Every structure is written in structure tokens, then in C-alpha cells.
Amino acid sequence: MIPLERLQAGLVIPIDKPLQWTSFQVVNKVKSTIRRLYNVKNIKIGHAGTLDPLATGLLLVCVGKATKSIEQLQAGKKLYSGTLVLGASTPCHDLEQAVDRLYPTDHISAEMVEEVRRSFLGDIEQVPPMFSAVKIDGQRAYTYARKDDPDAVIEPKKVHIESFELTPLGLTDKAPELPEPKAITQAINQLSPHLYNNPQGVVPSGLPRYGFQVLCGKGTYIRSLVRDFGAALDSGALLASLRRERVGDFRVENAVQLSEIEEFLVNGE
Image (tube, rainbow, N blue to C red):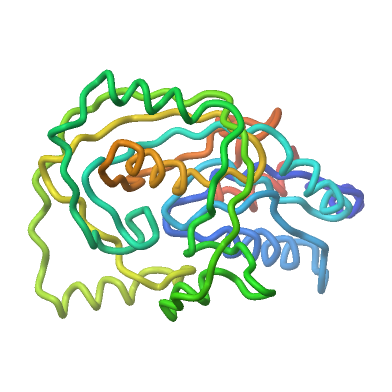
């Protein structure tokens, strides 16, 4: 077993965050496992960089004195991969909520996509999503978003996009048939509670879909990048899937599965 003194001295545990888990839930899972295994009442623990519930991949969980390095870890470059869909949008810019608007896409050419893609490279101004943990006057932005407060405004900030690669994946498939509303409600209630507490949306069929890979700096919101990419094409866009592959020198292929966190602690690093 990893010695308790080692944990208290500082350990960064790279976790492969599962779908539908919040980053907070992952930290709590690791914390409760440590408390039970080591019979301790409390231990310092936190994470370096939030992942949304519908995102998977690398989440750095910092234990003990490693929590002092959270800001430094967050400053590392991050590599994301995922899919985006043109011609539709949701209030939170991913599938955490249902599609609320459709847009034209027939005017979008491969040349136009390439030109717009290039325009997002380097230092850009980006407004974080309203459905996010960014603070407005001391309150989390998502509290205003839930109230649909028209006066809440997030100031833009500068972020750096080192690379932004796109691969056409054809059109979205036909949407699956949904069960009766009662069954939908029951299914939602069985899910782990998450930040926005809304059902997963369904992507309309026949819309252009792209795979992407983004290497970016601190503070970049991929949901905002996708939203702004769609707007620059005189259309709309939503984030259909997202996975964080790398943070600084940490890589997801070397991460611990959350279901194996006890085994990791018992068997050592």
C-alpha cells in the first residue's frame, strides 16, 4: 500500500474520468476511499482543471501537499479530442441539454471550414459559457444561467489555441426513437446527480459532423470554441463528445480508472 506519509507529502493521481461523473464526485470518491483504507478522518485533496459531466479523460487529483501545485498544473497545455456538430445548438453548447435551435449548413464549404479553423489559432478572445463555474459578482455563472438572468454577463478573456485540427465525419445519424416521457423521467432520476441536472439532448439527423483535436492553454473552454466556430460559419454548433487526452506531461493512457482507485492505492504506484 502507498504509505500514508507519501500521500500527505503530496501525490498527483491521474484519473480517467468516467462519463456522467462531475469532477467533484471523482474527488469525493478518491477522498472517501483514502479515508476508509487509511482510517483517517480527513486529508487535503483537490483537482487541477474541471471536466464537464459529459466529458471524459484526464483529471489530475492532487492529494496532500500536492494541492499546493494545482495552479501550476492547471497552467500546463491541454490536449482534447472529440466531435462537434454543425447546424444545431443547445443552451450549454453540449448535449447536457436538448437542442433548442437549428441553423442552415448548406452554404458551408470545405474551404470555408478551413479558413475559419485557421482564424481560431493563436491568441483569441473567448467568452466562457454561462453554464460554467466562472464567477460573476462572486456567484457561479451557472446559477444565473439556471434563472435565465438576462443581466448576467461574462467578460471575455484571452486564451491560446496552439493547434485545432478537424476531420469530416459525414452527417449525423437518424435520432433514436425515445421511450415514453414517464420512462425518460425514470431513467434520468437513476443517473448520478450532476451539475446542471438536465437530461442529455438528442442530436438531429442529417447535420455535418467533425472530429477534432485541440491543443490549448490554460482557461480554454472547448464548448465556447465550438460555439464560436459555428457562429463564424454563419451557423450554429454544439459539442457532441469531449475527451481530455493530456495535461502538461500527464497522459490519459497512463491514468487510473476510477473503478480501480482502491487497487491503485493498495498495490502502490
